[in-house]
Length: 148
Image (tube, rainbow, N blue to C red; front, side):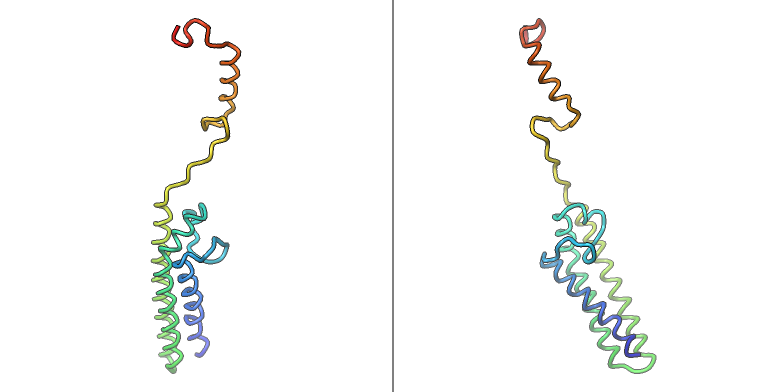
């Protein structure tokens, strides 16, 4: 029964630390922790925003697991399992709700404008260079060009 009580306690500690790091904007974009959705992984800024928004609910969910695991350590018999399951379920529901909030916040961050190559207007087809060469070779003295 002792190990059943440790499950929400240990998972809760991990979630509380990850949530606190995200809320304090100290959680770097990584492969293992934090809110990891396509929206949050778009770039470093969206990861930071998503995990800041989700950080507090995830930390609270983690503390629910820590407290519930601690209470279940004090109980005996079937009450240990019941308290551990309730703590685990509450922790996961609160952390999942925080993850949804973080995902939505990351989706709301506008996508950064792509940087244009030097001398291009953005189409990246190479036509800008060809048009510039053609204009230089024909010149502006042809009838109909340049308002003549």
